[in-house]
Image (cartoon, rainbow over all chains, first blue to last red; front, side, top):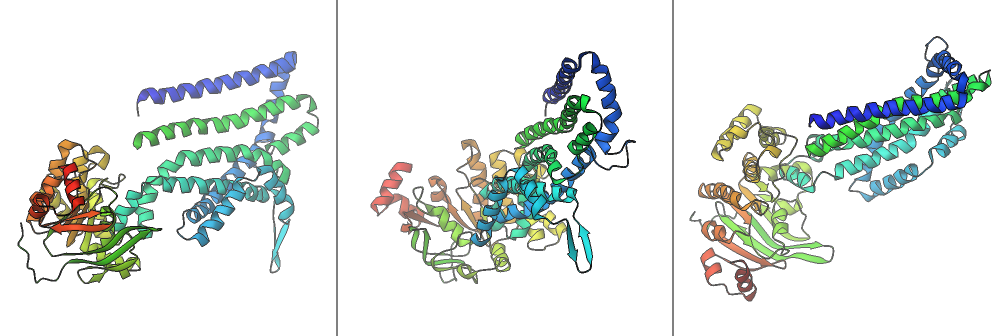
Length: 271
Length: 252
């Protein structure tokens, strides 16, 4: 990896960061004109509420912290189940492969918002097991809803990663006597995982941006908090608040995008 | 060249083997015996089933009919992975594209299978691996990764990897075809040495000079059948079948 390319990453990162910040700020001044300073002050005062769901920066009760938590849980679940479904996609046995392909395609091609609405009605508010009842919070519904399409995407990433390893590797490993499990663990996965990493990160970035949809399940995320705040006296600054939300999403997602690009290049160079 | 004991039981035996891919019969009525210490070369036009034939011998490809035995093992009836491990101890294979594991260094490539599959002691395997690397003059590359080696070096490592399994027979599948011309001889030299030491070798090859020099017997295959076979001098100097004559015209 040459320093030049790494330097270019940093340059792109700073240019993007400053550029987007300036553009959003410009929009803010065009809309609020003389009131821009007041708008900024309001945003500063509302920041703890919007980011943590509580007025004093904690405890974490909602807002952007909820988006991050939902995305992390959904990603963890999707990784486990996605790899499982992905193994199904490359199974030698049609009785496993065909249902897997069907499930993957169904989930992958469903609109996220529709799945989330479906969660709202399909998953009950509480589940009783024996005498105890478990409450299913809107956040849990959001996590399940976002996991479904994401795990399908991850299954595809997994399949593509495994199949990008040349058939000769399987052949050589088999002729040396490795069992299927050993081949997967010792030969294929160590080569395929680095190849999958950029795609997994892209999937996470999409999932993260998708968390803006969870408001429909009733989860107390950034958008939900914003709507409450706007409804309780900050109507005047509604536009400013939405611009702020855009900015927060950008600040979180943009570094992931830059980092992904860098990994992709490293993977290509390592080939 | 090794003088073979004609009475000895063959090490590898294929009897009336049929292999189909879908409707296409890629191997038909293939029968051949290979005795311990023999060097066999299989020649023929591309698409004649040579590589498939090799892969049947070590069970990478299942056959439709016929019998294959290596030593005391019936290859065509092996089912479980555990059954196959015994066969891996007898038959090793070297590939056209080397197929070293790119994420492991040379010594790991060589020692992993004996340690993980044959459950041999790591120190002993390592020591044997270094001796073998010495033989192919690659000791200094023991900790290099495959991508840091030339094609010829990679192929020599692949041969050592096969030898580390201490097999009784090694299958070579066009092992020089992917090499730059100047690297072909270093790989062929290694195979020649093996042959001299009495290792049983079955080679699919396009190197006719090598086949003539090293092989005990040469088999010519075309469209899935063995058309003609015999000692190299007879086959190359006095070919009988028209197809073989035509083939030799093209390649010599």
